[in-house]
Length: 158
Image (tube, rainbow, N blue to C red; front, side, top):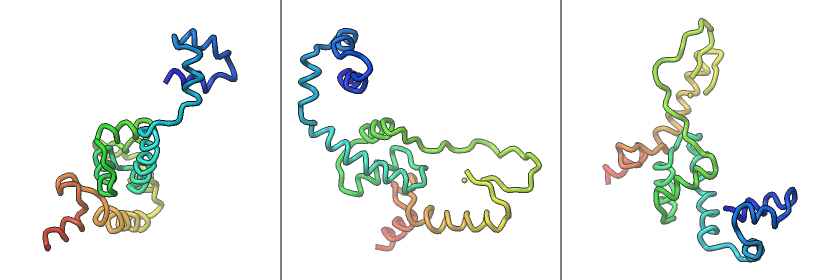
């Protein structure tokens, strides 16, 4: 972490001054620059891309636990805390649940799911798309063992 800071700011400040202030050796910094990346950091890069992809596919609604189940389904072995760390590093945060009812400001447009609708028809069509294209076929439900409703029904039939 300290060496990364030195590498990032070495154009603005002298390396020896930053190393002294951070309490690291200058030789250690230069050795760190030439050292190949670790297997862990390389696998974190691959896993981080999968985490980001899962998060975006869920319309930025999945938290770490659901993303973790997506990654496990793709065949990557990892722990929940690693997924939490990778999401934190990429600043990926699920949208919090809305508490209470929205305030009625007297406007004629409907406000929902981060969007403003001009007509009820637009809102109905968007809700239908959400339910039929995301919520039922792909969204993981914790009460169903992190399966989508469609997957859960198929497992019950088999």
